[in-house]
Amino acid sequence: MKILSLAFAAISISGCVAMPQTPDEFVKASEKTSLIEVHRDEYNRDTDDIYKVLSKKADECLNGVITTYQFHNGNRLAVSYQYTTRVKKTNGGDIRMTVQTKPLGATINIGGTPPPDGQYSAVINVKKKQNGRSKVESYTSFGAGEYYEYVTSWLGNKSTKCLMAGR
Image (cartoon, rainbow, N blue to C red; front, side):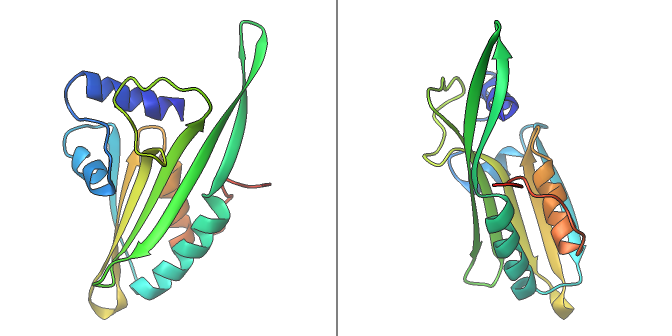
């Protein structure tokens, strides 16, 4: 996830886009930078079903703390990140899933101050269509494409490993 921080620092310093503070700002930033990937898919599932799947799987797989270990000048360093995922329904029955990543411990914010729960790594918007179909728009940061893969796997009824496996 250091790549994510550096990516937003690079685009912020270049003046292209500020650190997104909301999911809407993150989606809008995708229009100004190639560092946010956009995917659009349709599923033969209604939004109520998709909401149940995303809520269950996001809680199981995308919430928690992950600690990685790195070596620097012969020293082993532990780096921990808090992953916070929310799945919400809108008044019209559409769905929004957000994934935020926050480093724990001392950090240096070069590209602006991130939101309190961390930088947005992914925003998934699900819109209701006719005949029980749904359109899924996935916006993922550079280096965070696994969130798109998780969602498409879950909605395609395929098994996939979880980011939080073994917690």
